[in-house]
Image 1: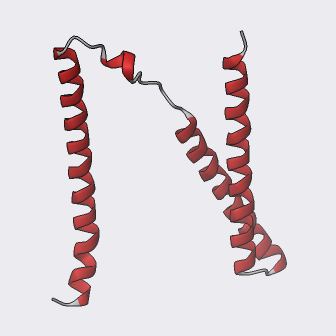
Image 2 (image 1 turned 30 degrees about the vertical axis):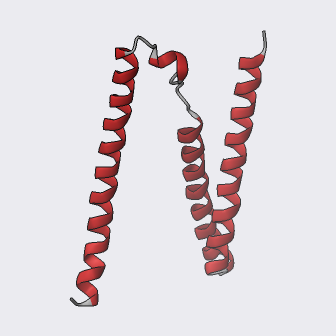
Image 3 (image 1 turned 90 degrees about the vertical axis):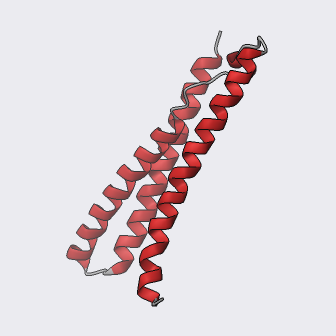
Length: 116
């Protein structure tokens, strides 16, 4: 096989493998829950499913920060001819600010939930 053909097959096989892995994980989680129900146990009592919004919040603020960083890098490149330095520095600075903002939002949310 040529190297180009192998390079095309790697993402295809990785995507199919990830898809099959998710299907099997869901299948075995469902079988475990069914076995608990058959034994008279409450599946939610042992491992309650809580909705966790921190992942999407973190990802969305990171993407917003990265977008603003690229925009600011473009502006700096056009205004001061900084080339690649502007893009990378602003991308990391604004991405970090987005992650810091998500941390602060999550911390405030936890403080509000822990109050009596």
